[in-house]
Amino acid sequence: MRNILLGLIVSIAILNGGVKDKKIDDWDYNATKMQMKRYKTFNRSPVISPSPVMEVGAGGDIAPTIGFSVGGAKDTNNFYDNIKNGYLPKLSSITYEGQFYNHYFDTGIKKRCKGLFCPSYSKAVTENIYTQEKEYFLTVGLNSGIKESDFKRKKLNIVVVLDISGSMGSSFEKYYYDSKGNKKSSNSSKSKMQIANRAIVDMIGHLKNDDRLGVILFDDRAYKAKPLRKIKYTNIAAIKKHILNIKDQGGTNWSGGYQKGMNLFNSIKLRKDYENRIIFITDAMPNRGELRKDGLFGLAKKASKKEIYTSFIGVGVDFNTDLVEYVSKTKGANYYSVHSSKEFSKRLDKEFDFMVTPMVFDLKLDFKSRGYKIVDIYGSPVANKKTGSIIDIGTLFPSATNNKKVKGGVVLLKLKKIGESKDISLSVSYKNRDGKRYKSSQRIKFSNRLEYDNNGIRKAILISNFVSLMKNWLADSRALCNNKSIYSYNYFNPVSESKYFRYIKNWEYKSCNLRVTNGYKKLFNLFKREFKKEMDIINDRSLNKELEILEEIISKNRDSIDKILNQKKDDWQY
Image (cartoon, rainbow, N blue to C red; front, top):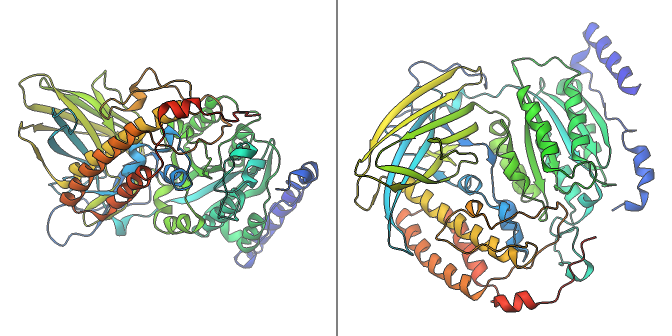
């Protein structure tokens, strides 16, 4: 009833020409009022007009342009946070595309791009440091001809769906389901709820007058806290105060929250000049109404067909990163994790418009060669090697550039030589936001000499080797903690290719202590030496982050596998 009255007030104001000065606090105070009593014991296509002669990429005083990066994971913060706090990260906490997005890459573009999307290709022939066998690599550079000055996002219909369940009240740096004797001390006094609230307030600061904002809160039920209304009609200062005062309570029902968020879009007419997006913020620990992994993501896929896309934001060191695997396969979706309130705020300042603006859809790149075949793909969350369609990416998002390098702007392909032919034919097709499909093709020729076309592909190979090593270590190490299977290290092959590895089936899980066996310590030391050599050649200080993690892991106490296997522990998870 209160929202109906508020709607009438806005309508009357519009008719009387008084909208300009009318700012309404439309927060529904009763949304969780009754629930708080129940749980009182818990109190714990952008608008672009590109010129046909727009050019980018090579020589001259050409205006800076944007680039592209794939959808899915946009960072590996959860991986770093777990190591920093002495926990063993989950295997899914580090992805190739997430790690690539921490870096800028020379994409090897030689000609000036005159369109929305221009792929470029770089080659490398290297020697495996363990087997001394020749290895062949190819990067696909994700370039655009759109000038930074021409890029403008559409107006937004944003619905924030916020998890307010009991686990959100726990410390950002602790595992909620840890038993008493396994809890870690924390230097942080902030809860996941407080950090999530702050992140939303920072995000709201990037909305403009004609953007709309709605808010849904959910625990084991879902509540409409704020209807979807334009910013210019909303008392944003009051809304921010309400958000900062949100408290945690109750259980967790993902699907209920998401469905309620979708319902808000039914109150408006979806128009082509608006971008529609759900911002889903959670620590990913559903325990009511969402015990099947495909429940929420089925809803997200249905929403994407209506051009309502989703950004997932994970909060807390115990955030269950297994959802990243599913996010990456959803059209228009991306995933971020909150590293800290301050850093997330800085990131939004630079990337908010990119985060909410998918631009390229249904990208496919076909690989044909009698001399080479695809062995592995790094940086593309979905790929089909069997049919020859080596890249099948649902979405490309705009990405920042720096000195003609693109943030996260490559996908790396590992090849195997199977014949004498040196030629490779590459055909790419994609759709723009209006559904129009474009195609292009190019032929390249490999050499047998040990060489790199540029430092961009050299850096991509180095980072992918780092990620593969970490994934193998995590698979083996977690097999000694929560998992029931073990995967043997196999020269940087992706763990997901192994039939032996299995993900933990439950969402509610405890921490694993960070340990490094003698064998892996030797392997990390060997890789660290090679990493430093390559880092010096590439001369890129951004690689210090990976080097610091290697040193952090190597510095941990060594434990024999027998000691870990025989260790007595309280593994009660009720």
